Image 1 (cartoon, rainbow, N blue to C red):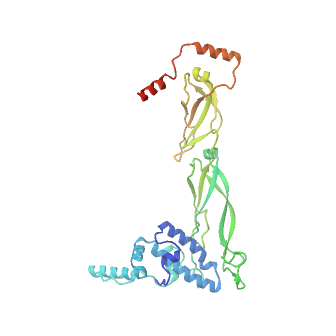
Image 2: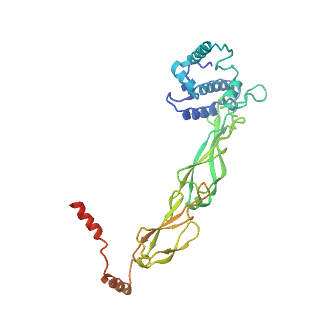
Image 3: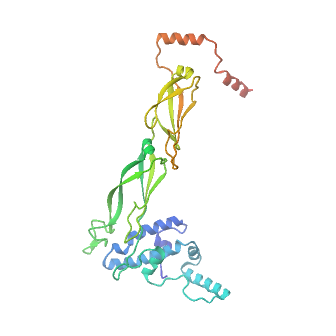
Length: 343
């Protein structure tokens, strides 16, 4: 390895405390910027050199053992590693020859060894394969979309080779005015995706191969859809179960009744048991959302006893008659509890 003045962290553009994921993302981002196949002429030669350095830095920093040695010994880490191996071989009297962890100097071999791509393309120039980046976008669903699954058209923006300069960033000796000298430009595309039933709020759905396309045979990245389920004034999602507040009149709660209740499909008739209390729940089995195992959640009806906003003279007379009947005091328990807490 022959990286020189700049250290591996500088080449990748990450701090020394970068995580493995930070290093991977930085490598992918930088690789797409300086990929030799996006440039022509003298720029291509320059990018080949930078791309080789980038692969060298990534190969070391993405390997925990090599990164540890690099952090300890700096640019001399290979010599330290070779020394350790030689010492181990001598101690074991193995006497095996061959290289110990170095590069052969051929860029195509380096790329093929560490990235599984095609080390050489057609002709004499290398065909560098780079996997596409993953993309992430938000998708907003209704709770009924979650029940059945839904197809959506997703608009994506990706970086592609500038058509004006062919990726060289230069046109007639000057920076390309179309891409601003970047060699790439933004391009929009629309894809249709199928979002499965039963997805949960604030989770990610992975669509393999729907991300950025790879270069020179590199695998396309993945598309991640971050799901946002819109609030609904009637249905409240609790995992795979659904909750609905169901208003009932006092006499329906006291005497029992058959009433219509909403579900995610069609309203259904339910029985309110006599003597039902406020906030008690009725369970409708299998009327919730589908689970990953193919089962179905439940729908729970939470009873809310409501009063009429206006009553007729006949209704008032009935309420007055009811008030004269003997009943236990519904406030007796909280009054007793308040006295106990103050004593």
